[in-house]
Image (cartoon, rainbow, N blue to C red; front, side, top):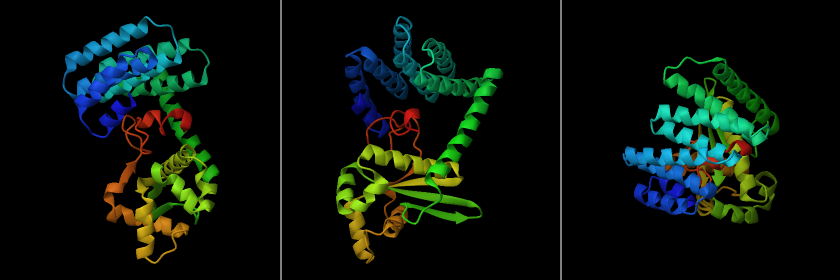
Length: 301
C-alpha cells in the first residue's frame, strides 16, 4: 500500500499504483479499506468513473456494516478529501456527513475529536462549493479554524523564537513580506551529518523523525508568520561539502549551511520544493507516505 501511494504521489505509472492497491486490498482489514481509497482515486485519475463509483459504493456498504471505530472515521475522512479532489463534491459531502455521524459514535476520544473538527471544516467548504447555505455549525467550524491558526502561530513563536544565527533558515525581507528557505538533510545523509558535526545533535535530535518534526514546525511558523512562500531545500552532504570547499567556507559553520540553502534555490532547483505539499501529495520527508498521514498528520502538528 505504501508503495502504491509512493508511485501515485511521485507522478509515476497510475496503472502500476492501481495494481499495488488492488493487491493490498486483498489482505482486508483496516489497511485493505485504506487501499480501496487508493483504488478509487486511481480509477478517477484514469477517467474510469463508473468503476470508481462502484468501488466507493462497495466501500461505503462495507463500512456501514461495521461497528464504529477510529479506523472507520479515518476512512470517511480520506474518502471525503479524495472525492473532493476528484471533483465529486456531492459524494464527498455525503461521505463527510456520514463520517461526522461515525465520529460522534466514537465518544470523547481526542483523536476522534480531531477528526470530527477536520470533517466539520471539510463540510463547510463542500457546502459552500455546492451553493448550500451555511448553518450555525458550519460558521462555528470556520471560527474555530481561524482561532486554531492564531493559537498555533503564537505557540510556535513562543517555542521557537525569532530567527537565530545558528538556524538553517534564511529569510529575505522586503516591504514587510519575506521568503523563507529551510534546509533539510536527506534521510540517507542524516546519520552522517550527526557524525560529521556532533554539535548539530542538540538542534536536530537523535533520529530522523524528531528532526523531521523540527523542520515541519519551523516551516509552519514561518508560513503562519507571513512568509510569502516557504521553500524547502533538500541538502546532500556530498554536494554541501563540495560547495563549502569551492567557496572556501567552514562546513561546520551554521552560516555556511544557511548560505548553501539559498545557493541551492538557483543552482540546484531540482532540490527545491514549496512547503507545504498538498495533503494528498507525497510527504516532503521521503517516507513514501501521503503528507497528511506523515509530517502533515494532526497528531504530529
